[in-house]
Image 1 (cartoon, rainbow, N blue to C red):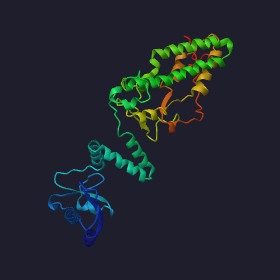
Image 2 (image 1 turned 60 degrees about the vertical axis):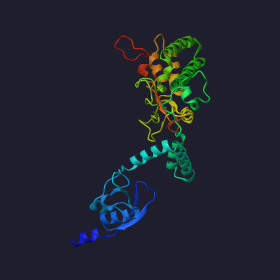
Image 3 (image 1 turned 45 degrees about the vertical axis):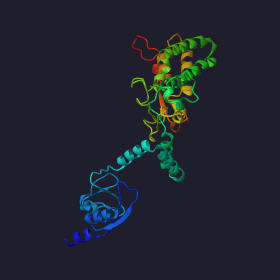
Image 4 (image 1 turned 30 degrees about the vertical axis):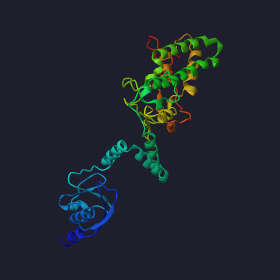
Length: 339
């Protein structure tokens, strides 16, 4: 009994503030009542109707809870009618401040950025400043002219440009395949051209898979959310991105430009593996039909492509090979692999 009384009377120190003040004060107390009385006196609040809560998550304190808290825990006094949910309330207040006092919030963020050396906080602030003036929901050129700076006038809305951007990347893959004809043995060059022409026609039929970057496409066809957020899918040899890279190129011009550095990376490599495998398949076909659909999927679809942030794009050899059993179209006989 004496031990419990001694524990209850042990002096502890807490940092306390109110909802409407950024100032924090150290208050020494032996129990919750003493803490509330001193805090209310300091901030001129009515002690009989004021609650004491954890600043981190808004949990209301009891005497027992208070005794188990370490010294210098940050607390908040809530007057009648006030609520606090920790960082969620902080974010809500920040957003309200942004919409009401945008220029002040921008300047405050820049000031913190110049004085703060912690890399993680600097990154958050850089991203915050970069996206302060974003206009994600706008689609047309007239509704967000800054986004279209440097883009040809023929592009009238964001989604059509992003679709064109994706098409351009896929077209470049097709061009690389076609240009490889020069390295094919002359006696099978015509056959190689037939295969690449088939690939080209199939690619045109699906509009070069520009749907991957188009947020107006159905969910199953696009790589982004309906708002235009893209997430890094991680390096070729991992299931996801451990850094959780994400970006919305629809938000502003800077994000659009940064997104152009993201890669549609081939897991089984295009230049080192797929194209050489295709040329070898044509050379060794001996009358068999090359399974162009297999190569089409490896070259131009998400079956073999991964969208990755530049930091997750590993340029070392992937050491992944084509599937020999898929190179040629199977005969109608029980034989599965034709070699």
